[in-house]
Amino acid sequence: MDAEGESPGRAPRTAVAVDGKTLRGSRTALHQAVHLVAAAVHGGAVIAQRQVATKSNEITAFRRSWPPSTRPAPC
Image (cartoon, rainbow, N blue to C red; front, top):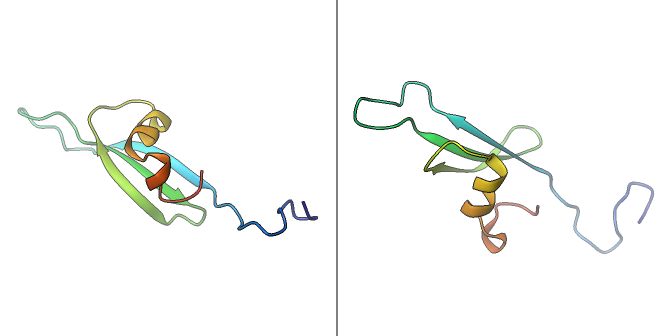
């Protein structure tokens, strides 16, 4: 590793933040509220977002929604 903590010859890693939200006002008499899980990079750019069946742990939903081969950025 060099002074900045990077490994020579390897591409820099990108940090991805994962957050889940329930959409306010999306619940009706016939439907449950909509739950979304989003992945964002530093700076706030959302790089992926998916609707999930129920409100749950965001990390678990992220792992189920994006298998390692299809994840939006290195994790």
